[in-house]
Image (tube, rainbow over all chains, first blue to last red; front, top):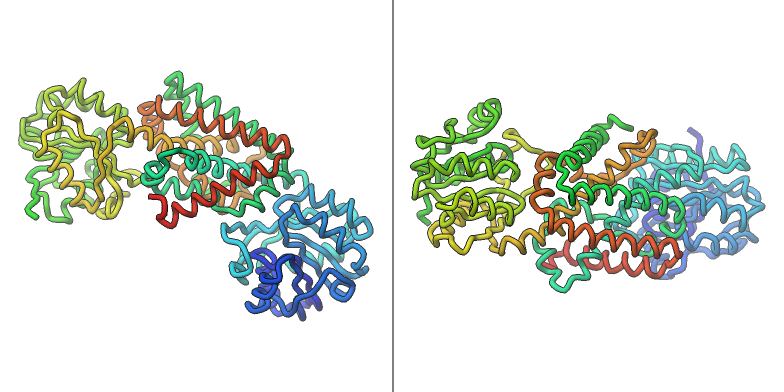
Length: 292
Length: 292
């Protein structure tokens, strides 16, 4: 419906950035995609795969006339990136990001891009995958997936509209939330499960006779630990970035586990069954789309 | 290779018992399958689905001349079942079970079937599924799955051979372990993950505004919590039956979580990344078959 971008600049052409670029190219709404990144090899691969049209640098030539810039690096790198790009941003460029945490991004924007708060519209695309890198990028990564925008009060309406239209053009269903609420919800439904899954595998990995344990691990273990194959650096950054909310969720979960431990120790079968039964009921309702 | 059963008696014609019966019928190695159970409706359904040939009772007519009996009820019901069947068992019948815990089954056999210790060969088919009931039974449930036998020192060699051949005829790969070692391994790779998954969903289910949490739960959450849709009564029984080993695993996991909590609280990004990195490396090696 008339949505068009001239130049798109993508910082970080891995799974998140590469898929965003590819989706917009395939939707035919972008004239030129310029990629920027730390690794020349990754940029070359992105060019070869057609994710980007050319390789740029964090300078005025690349940034001044961009219609949209996407920050798709690990969240830990974003503050330094914002500092680096600040001098070269023009007044026209809308900016968004693909980070899994939002309060920290908002804080970094206020600190390092104070002149661009009106045009930075933070976003979190909910499209996790244990694979990463340019080779994992695909045009339909965001199709029918949720993307949560956490606009700043300072945001211009047309910057929000442009960012929203870009994510929608990727096929995503766009939601809006306050940054702090976003971080609380995702600490509970995403960051904590990742921590728990990493912890279980690590706990087993440290055993002397670990082969015998892993030999008998079956489909339940496979599913429970799929997210323990996720990117360590990315999840380290997410945990640190969302530390406060995650610590709250973790403490609550530790309390829940201690309740279960006491029930088990006391042989309280009814208490265990009540917890399991409520969990199953709610899990099934969620899977059937009756909770969300 | 000549393995044949005349009469098979199955106690509990749900997923485990029904699939065992169906696999042996389809393999053409059993002449007659008799089902016994608490629920007349389930037995009628099993008969209608062709899992069993007729409905029996826990009496001499049904049991005296059986070649093999499978106990496929929740583990919590097995002691009472053993007491009920003891007077009617003949000297020829081999017995096995499908319980997920083994030390408790061995203890119950010694207590309630002391005259039949030579012919009771405990088994654990590793074929979990979140569905249960006769309708979920399928002939290939055990195909290429592991089944762990935990023979008693008192077992006759021919009882072990018959039980092993029956599980192999279902398509299973048969292993042997000591009961206590079995219970320790499965506490770690199966029972604990179930407890952790139930706990996470229960923790979220109790929140006032739970819809907003579940709305943004994605594929990582889906996989992590798939086992939280498992059968509450069955898992209550498993936890209670394997209480000691599970308490040990749970305590160790709680220690691991507390280490992670302290690392997070202290902002120790390197410690978090080291845990995540080792977990990912081992999880990937396991998925690629390089650990087992």
